[in-house]
Structure formats: C-alpha cells, structure tokens
Length: 114
Image: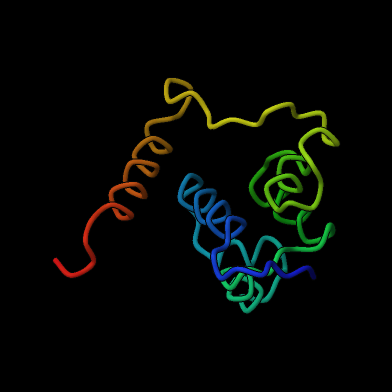
C-alpha cells in the first residue's frame, strides 16, 4: 500500500462521505469488501488502498472503479477519462446525500468545545 506523507487523509474523507451517503457503517463496508477494519484505521492515518482494494471499495459502494482510483490518487483523472472531476450538483443529490453533506460541513465548522 502507498502512504501519504501527511496525517490529513483525503482518501479517508472521501470514504467517510461515501459511507454517510450510503447509510453504511465501517462494519458493513468491511463485510462487503472482506477487508479487516484495521485497513480503515490505516486509511484514516493517510495510507491509500491498492488497486485491488480500490476495486473492492467501488463494488461495495456500487460506483465506478475508475472514480475510486482517482479519489485514492492511484491514477490521474485524465487517465480515467474524467476531465475536471467536480463536486456533484446539489440539485442532483438525493435528500439523504444532501443532509449527509450538510451534516459533515456543520461538524467541521462548529467549535469542538461547545
């Protein structure tokens, strides 16, 4: 597996958004992928998945393996034929996805000691 130098983990942030959007827990993701939950801890610390693991994650979330590989920074968007990946149009999100995104943003912007 490849490790990012920083403790910040864009890969884990993306996985967490997918979990929230799909109403899924890490236990369920572990069950669907066959990955040990310790893999998720490593991802939180900045480690990225292998190509094979990215494929398992894509299947679990029901999305394109190319999208997952781009998000994991295993390939460039241009390699996947994804020019300028952007955030989805809020109007195209389901109510559950929109609420999950708003909840994430509010958690990030609120003081932790309130």
